[in-house]
Length: 337
Ligand code: PHE
Image 1 (tube, rainbow, N blue to C red):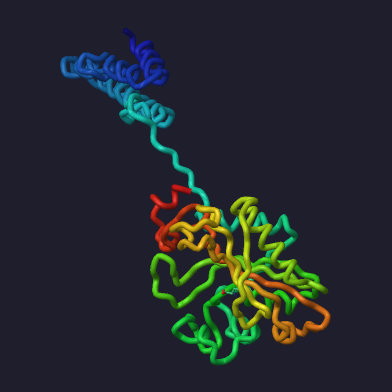
Image 2 (cartoon, rainbow, N blue to C red; image 1 turned 180 degrees about the horizontal axis):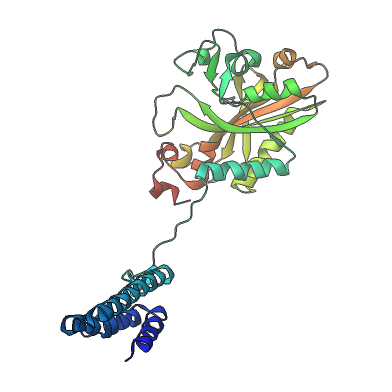
């Protein structure tokens, strides 16, 4: 092969090698042990002194040309090949597919959302207040006397003398009324905190929904109606609701409401402690002193308020036997709902 056609075929074969195998074949063809360029290089030794410089120069030029083209074609091939050319992860198509688990809302959030939806349908809008609350809103504005036991360190987490973790959602009543005029119909939903010894039915943090309706001529009958509608939407239309007299500083009269046991329909069973009734909320008519603290005229306006424990509703509705499950973040629990 003359030098010119050798040079052309080097360029052709190496520059246009279509893949790694092709390129390697071309390298061997020219630079391999029996390659064309190698043969020329070997000729240098046997050439006469006269021819040697010419042959040497030519052979070395072709060697450099071939090596240079090879290096750049190799780089080109690496940059265009996908990695799978070099490594294919072992795949066993007979193995079961990976589980794709999507997250979902915590059962407490689900219960919150369900209850909020019910209240929204009844005309309540959502109000908010802080978890870290002033003592004033949590107790004083709600007509709690100075010596009321729930003000005690034993029951309440204080941050300073004036600041605490709210023990109920009732302070949102005061905050909302301060900034709004009746008629108003709101719920406040969120976390509350009490300095409790933790056991299956007591937690240091739990959740409440507060309801407040203020207008002219609001009566206890309105309260009973709304509580009944709400409970029947949650637990079924046959559920009965009864009110028992109770005491809260910020409502007068005050009551606790029970619903007929969903497990035995009121006959008495272990779920309701054989009484047929399950306590579900505290409620009452807004105390005139609360209206006075805000600047509403208790002669003009009346209203009702209630507070429901959301954890308790979730426990009853989904048959959960221990409050502590809600906060343990054990996925075996969470994924059941
Ligand atoms: N805040 C009371 C509690 O946590 C519940 C309640 C709310 C009672 C509204 C009456 C009116 O126990």
